[in-house]
Length: 69
Figure 1 (spheres, helix red, strand yellow):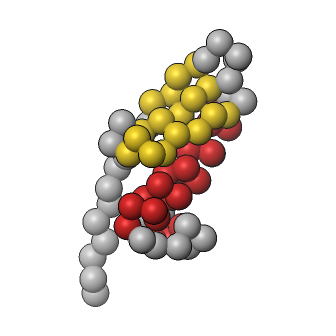
Figure 2 (cartoon, one colour; figure 1 turned 180 degrees about the vertical axis):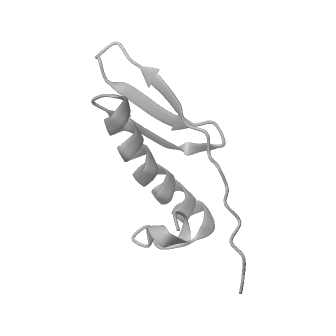
């Protein structure tokens, strides 16, 4: 069986002046999003990371299993 290696991507949650929260990844600057609160920003952050990594590695953004499995 092929073993899977997990890669962690730290996320920064930054409150902004509008009362929303910016989520950005120091290791993947292309992945950035905004949410209504921290929980919402984290939900959107996963999608932003999938899209950014898909673009970097040439995979379909619709198949998040390539990143989150």
